[in-house]
Length: 440
Image (cartoon, rainbow, N blue to C red; front, side):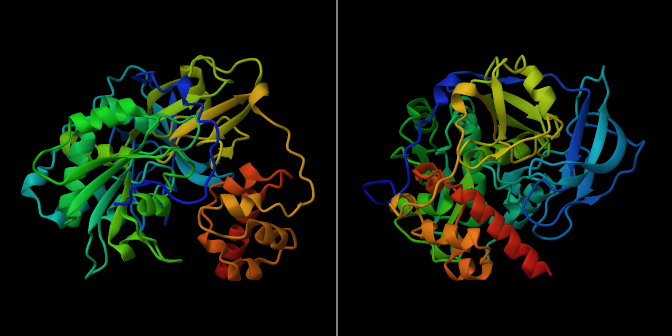
């Protein structure tokens, strides 16, 4: 393990976590309606299995996985399927979604279900149970977890890395999960190690979360090799490749996955959710969401049914302040600003940040001054200045030759640019253009 426990480059934005870091997790009331998109994970959208007018209970299957890289979607509240229609999606598109009218006087108790005994299951059976529960990465990417737990034939997993960094400013979802549910994190780690046959596990937590480090260390198992690794506070320390470099000292080759260097990385909230699946038998139907920022009256960490509309979640936090200006799904570095309060919370929604007038800066771009700040900030050693020039000229193919696909859209270049050029947004547009070109 490297002594520095960090990586080269990156930036140091103000973390602004003090708004919710000490706020205990609470459960929000069930809304009148939930809207569950069929596309809320990486890969192929789920395939619908219910019809309008059908009654469903919490945890009932709404849509099944449609392929290997896909995940099922389950009802997050008891009620009646109103319709299946196109609905505003947090990514800016309109996506097919199931609308459920929530029963107003229901106890919201799920059907009795069989709880899988993971100790009596083979690794493949454990992975199947995780797949059927619809578990995806809860750090934002929403990659189906069962895919990560099914490495290619012949691959050897040397280390399981648990990502508890939560380096995005404002967000404290993972922080509070580790503080309040450390036993679940340890159980989920044990289950994942058995699924993968991993020799050891490393739990990486940034040093600005001392209470989380203490809680995880206090509950460490004595019979398996699990280690807590305090990390340097830097953004994007929680990015998969950066975390592997910091903890294991290995570089993931361009265009390759962590399994190429014998490592699997999983977000700490996903690990806790895996434990919950084997404790309760329930699929992934709710998650912890941080609602924070100067534009919300009562910042906090809430257990939220998946599919809750943004307006209902904000209402559970006493609504917006008079000077609220911008609502972001995710953190301010990689999140997406929203234009519609009817967009639903997805499985991968880790936080809602509401910025007030003092937190929003008007950014008028100016010509590039060739200062090199973006090169010094880029954690994957790209040339954002060159890529930005190519993007503005719409020379997408040349951007691909300059390794655009290695860009993880972390926003370090945009954050550090003195000319206020929206480099990360330009790269996102370029990637979308290349996808459209490939599809055509």
